[in-house]
Image 1 (spheres, one colour):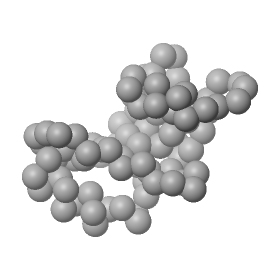
Image 2: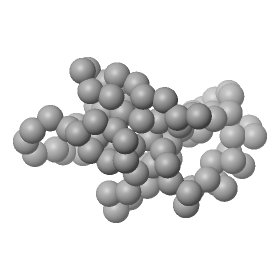
Image 3: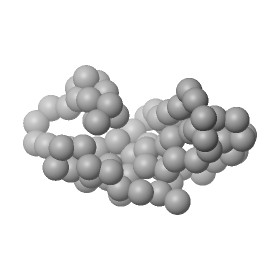
Image 4: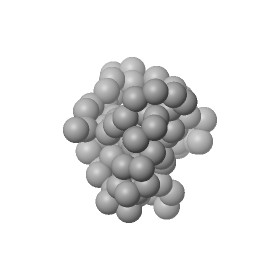
Length: 83
């Protein structure tokens, strides 16, 4: 199931399945949430048979907490993902 993880005082929602490596991160585009996405469910089911796969909601999407005030950059999103 999905879980909420702390990324420096805010929480992002992620869904991790499978075991092994490398971990595959699925991040839908167009500002769509990832953890609850049904569009990627079939792909993730197949990937989870052989490795760990993670879908997550970027800050402000789905059930993740909103981002800090101000302009967000792709570097900010990458830092959240790393955390």
